[in-house]
Amino acid sequence: MNILALDYGHKRIGLAYADSEIGVAVPVKAAVEQTPQQRLARIFDEIKMRGIGVLVVGYPLNMDGTKSQKAREVDAFIEGVSASFGGKIVRVDERLSSYQAESDMAAFSGRKPKSVAARQKNRRTGEVDSRAAALFLQEYLDTGETVDSIPLE
Image 1: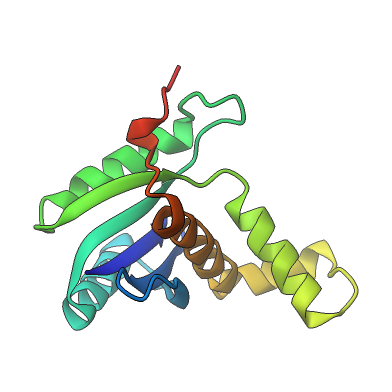
Image 2: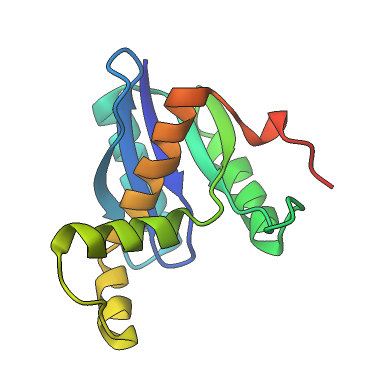
């Protein structure tokens, strides 16, 4: 089954893809279009092109495991997507995934940590978001754990 992971954000949505038989998550170009409607169209183009049957959506819980305000925004986003998507949608814990993706990118490059301005510029491309989506998609593939299996307070 083909799976697409979404790391939701107001300005960009990180995307990662996996075939569950192969079991390896890879980042793909993020949805960074100007409007939310254009970003959704881009996501649905990916869904159609890749024959996606499952969406794995990063769910931003607070560090103590409670539901954050951002998680409520993700719920609204999922509700909008589910109206047009006929497959399964699962929520997975994405705490610290963007931080981990940024750290991994810095470690693999072998360069000194970038300034805040340089990191912000780098984030605009959506590469960090797509790498974060690949991280939590890989964890989902490895464990099958969803937010539904985590008790929320």
